[in-house]
Amino acid sequence: MLLLGVSSAAAEAKATSRAADPAKPAAADGAKPAASGPAVRFDIDEFRVEGADHLPQIEVEAAVYPFMGPGRTADDVEKARAALEKAYHDRGLQTVGVAVPQQDAQRGFIVLKVTENKVGRLRVKGSRYFDLGKIKGSATSLKEGTLPNFNEVTKDIVALNRWPDRRVTPALRAGVTPGTVDVDLNVEDTYPLHGSVELNNRQSPSTTPQRLSLSARYDNLWQLGHSATFTFQTAPLNPKDATVFSGSYMARTDYDWLNVLIYGLKSDSSVATVGGANVVGPGHVIGFRNVITLPPKGELFHTLSFGADYKDFQQTLSLASNSFDSPVRYVPLVAAYTASFQGEGRLTQLNATITTGLRGIGSDPNQFDVKRYKATASFISLRGDVSHTHDLPGGLQVFGKVQGQAADQPLVSSEQLSLGGQDTVRGYLESEVLGDYGVAGTLELRSPNIAPYMEQTYDVPGRQPVKLNIFNDWRFFAFADAGYARIHDPLPDQQYQFDLASYGVGIRMKTLDHLNAIVFVGMPLTTQQVTVSNHPRVSFRVWGEF
Image 1 (cartoon, rainbow, N blue to C red):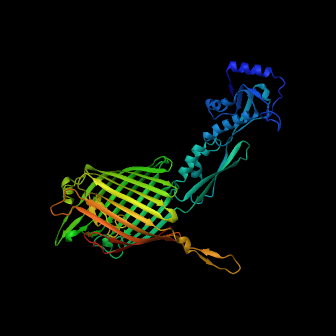
Image 2 (spheres, rainbow, N blue to C red):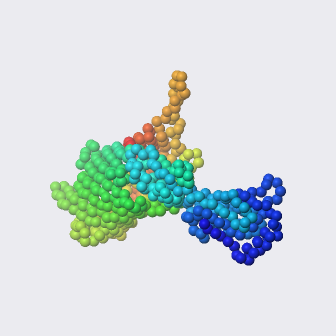
Image 3 (cartoon, rainbow, N blue to C red):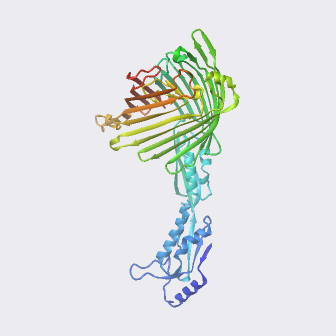
């Protein structure tokens, strides 16, 4: 029991006050006044708080002290009770209640009884594909026999819901055992196997147009939430143009804020460059990343990752009847920061990556120089992009994006900034321009979603009409893109700067919850190595996912 008193002088004054009015009636239940007549007044020299085991005494005193003193009423007692209960709730102890038991208020002290309702039973319901015991064990703040702190409960639920294909919602009710609460963790989950098939015309120079991509991912290996992904990409009309195998494995750790990602890529492709020189670019990449989920701040959600790659490219340059190898191997260190700010009708996303090569690991300086004049293994590059989507009146949307790269020296082609294609400047071939540094921008205006207007109503005899709409989203858009890239230390007569610009219109839709399509026409405004200005190019992406 906690006792809270006032100074002796004040207590003496209040004792005199009580002695001067010995006829005051006794109060019960906080001395609630009658419906009519003046409120019954009494002195409160101290509060005696019973059962306050999980709140520091100084906070108990701070909550009830303002309501002590002479000439108090039942309303002051209720305010003290509410203030003490609020002090608990402000600390996240939402299952604590404070009551005023039946008592004589004329004794000079008031008893407040605290009931700290602990967790009686914790059950997991509805989980089909995720281990019940692991879900229960991850909710440490709701362990049976403990007083739940909902500040910690929120953190546990957020961590549980970071896993894809699963959503956990807690539900509390009065416990079977008096003085307890029972908690159900209600789980909504789906089978954690996903796949996608995509056909597009992301054509690079001197290759066939079509590209086919197949991907499969499983997100709950070993019931640990580990994820494995495999992707295969090819040019179906000529596999030598593009054949890429890639895979990754993401492992969760005992720290819910830390994941470890390892991945690999093997590429076998053939791309022709300017001047009739054919570049055959087989190679592979192996790397890892430590991915740290940083604490959210309001609308900000962000992550930090860092790691290293091993890159090995075995290129052969062919010119007429002669050819020579220009292999290069190197190990860059990579750190990246990603952030998103999401609010009502708006979304801003930021990505920033810094890459630095390690001298002395991989190819010697001569091999780098053969690969690219004055290129070295000890390079530094900074790449970033920022985008913003904003809802406008009438269902319109506007989207803008700026991306770019800076580098301190000439870079090998695998580290250069590529411009042209569906993700940078539309209307040009993919990676039609390479530069050591540069910038690109996009502005896009999107129409209102017309999918709701595609709904059809069918009459069924003897039943209510059936409404059917196979479209989830359908928008038209208009865009303007531009890009600029330059290279360091160009060779004599080598083009060292590139300007790209285009505009166009397109359509984006989603149907049957799983099928997506984007089709657009881009009008290039400048001529590059393949693209001719004012010759429109039609691009498309069609993909299905589950």
